[in-house]
Image (cartoon, rainbow, N blue to C red; front, side, top):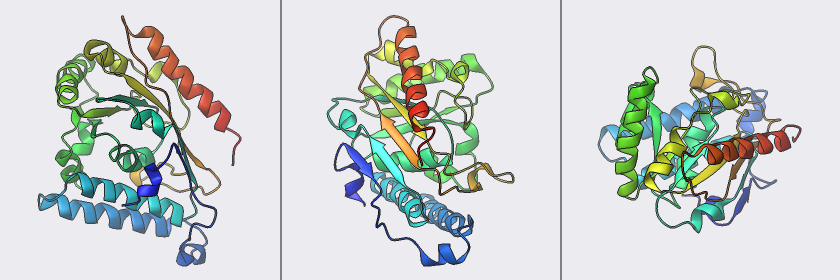
Amino acid sequence: MRQEITAGNEYITPKDFPHILIDRLTFKSRFIFTCLFIQSVFKARGIARKGNYGTREWIDSSHDIFTDVERCGGRIHITGLDHIRKSTGPLLFLSNHMSTLETMIFPGIIQPLKNVTFVVKDALVNHWAFKDVMRSRNPIVLSRSNAREDFRIVMEQGQERLQNGISIIIFPQSTRRVEFCAPEFNSLGTKLAAKTGVKVIPIAIKTDFWGLGKLSSYLGPIDRSKQVHIAFGEPMSVTGSGKEEHLKIIEFIQTHLETWKDKK
């Protein structure tokens, strides 16, 4: 367990972080990173299938992938961790969705500070490689094909998770996109916050270090020139319809993406 990741308010990959020599010998392609990712997935799947995949195992699996990113030349910069640490009670985390990376490393960042689960698509809990792990985390599962039914599920199951002290990560976009499209960022999260009185922490991410693959979206190329950025905002209370707070979350994401656009 890499405790230094969440030890302070900010984390930056050390400049002298040890890289894998064989990664350089394979011309810095995706090959080694993909092999490490597959190895981590099968390791977690094996533990979960035996019924032994708990909170510590989830954090460790996430930290394995976090470390693999850095060992293959990725640079990760996280800010705003104190906003999580200093908050009392469960939280709703609302984030833009850019790649596979955030799904894999959020548990290792958030879970050590807050007990948390995801809102996920049913395809993920039915995927042969990920279903055992995801089902063990008691996620809220949506079809993304029936908006009214998805809304009911989030309102009912979301309230139940929050009442039990479990924070929730929601990606309000319908799918992963490199370019942030505000109209696709739905208001499910802010509506749940308004109903339950739970505070929202907006998250802005830039994770296009890990692209989407053609044969499998989970096995895309990596671009070492693109730094990984994750920013946690201040906790936000949602009142009324939540429209104002929804717009503030979108502004938080857009502002950070604009700031990071030209950074290497």
